Length: 377
Image (cartoon, rainbow, N blue to C red; front, side, top):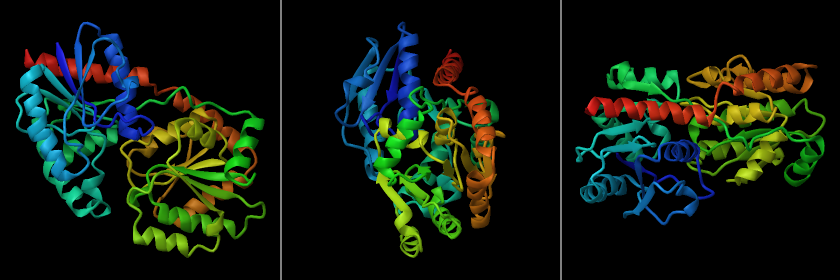
């Protein structure tokens, strides 16, 4: 069977959440199924690290699709032209975008519908494209995969899709994330936080990540902090709004906030493994991979009690209302001042992380693909 795959987001040293999902699942599926041909379709020059096995055949088609108008050109013009050449039996799209014009049966991985809940958090044209096209993608798809029960219910309800058409394919966590020794943690703190302990945020800087409330909470926490604890913010400023900037610039303790920008995978392991706690208090997540990464590094987690985050964290994290600055502050205080709490959270976090793996994710996605193949027959 010929399986065409949208691999636009496989970009070396720049794998975001969807890119990581794509790399981890596709590498395993291609190697596990040498009887099938996988046609990886890129929109720019690719790194050979993503050609995972001999049954992977790469194609590059223009334009580089990073804007709604270019999305339309890539998916509705360039992709159909390529499909005429390679004649795939199935199209798999790990970022959920499909080609409406083609008749090739499709599997769409829709990670979440954040743009439906918070449309104003995105640039106007991007938000309009998502809200116009994703309902059409959901109807066109032979099957839909998503990364949590929360997102499955959300997609089914929002787009009136039968739940039997949607499969939950949980994310996994890389084995690179591991506990660090005391000396390793000291080295990281010397490099990143002036040898001070720190809370850590990981992710792209955009409004739904709730950085405004995190800044406000950290500022209040610092009023009673005598040891110089820092807040490290690791991620690219995807949509750094005026509101976020104003909140940061008006912090009393803004000099204790450290922005690293996008970090490499090896740096991320070090930052997570050396943190006092991960503060991941988004208002909306389809999954939340950083929660599992922290668990596997023996790093406690403070996360939100909304959307998918309680599903991922189980009872292994401190859950807070992300809209409540005071609840976030109280959780930070508990991490620092409550004897024995970190050890309890670390033990529970390790146990929770064992429920998720990329091997399982790849198997679940392949099962979804097989269901789509059976539907065609």
